[in-house]
Length: 460
Image 1 (tube, rainbow, N blue to C red):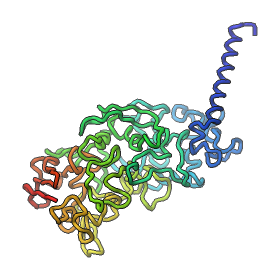
Image 2: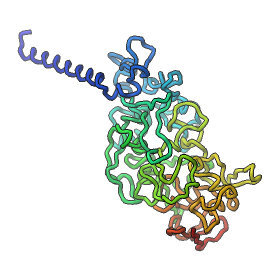
Image 3: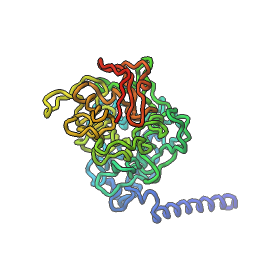
Image 4: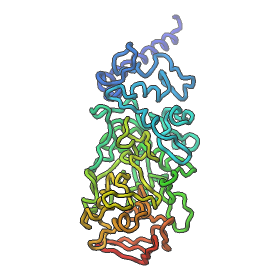
């Protein structure tokens, strides 16, 4: 080769190739992200049927020269199949450290425009066409409008996801002040890092945030992944995906005067500047809740992850997490938002308000809130002297009332998640103005099921 410039280009190309190989070798030898992940482990890592590669090597997911899919924009990087099919080669229940991830998608009812039972990962199980997912998504528009989607890699980074050492398990620990932290299986996925929350009740779109990979099990949280799709970081769906039957959330769609809408922007709902919220982003505000209001291991100082409520049912097989459930909205247990669906308690021999298997009572003690005979009145903060007012509303008096009649689900800018459902409550001052909080109790100014509380105060 006589051209010196050509020789220099060839030499430079070889040098750069060598540097790239050296860096790759260093990452592998020095314990880079992939080797430290569950997939890269040389003992328990990914092992497709191919015998050409040692356990945990890249070749078990990536073809050496080209992937087999006809659309490289949907399935890039030389994958040997479509994304979820690559994952399910191992996550099919046949590998010790990979619980069957297909169950949540395959054994649940189909999604409709209002009733959701699963994240629509696969066209095989969800009935939808392949998503508009692209690698390297960072813009809010990538997760909303016509590109709204859910793929495995939206929540899991296959080059960083790890296992906690228990076969088939890699979940956060429920209860306690660290119950909202990122699970090892979610390491490396992108999520919203909020540098400063806005004022109470403010839309999340005006918050200060960055979308970046979540790499810390102590400083990152599960909700950060969920909020990149379930907040006004992106364009939320215009249709009311609120369910049907007893799951219909009328506070979301109500046009009634005085009804404060339930936040569909979950960043707005869990904002720790609100007066009340379920403790996803921070420990709850009501530190004085009596201990016996909770079931173990929950307490007033607990934090929680989205998947404490949104996951498979307790008896369901397959992988943990919000993949799919037999209960609407990917809920772990059933829940009633509509009134007048009674539960027959065999121990009482009569209908009372709530089934102890409902979702709320996995954390909040059913005997305290419903079955008054089982507990002293001091086990709840909602009491008038020694009179347990929770059981009066949920058990022995208004047996059709639900938790949702008085409370919102995720969070609101009113103490105790108060937001009365005006489908059942008449409140001239509005669904939140009808309640006045005080240090020792509060008062209501409303009419509910024919009972006139105009006003009716209670004091502990």
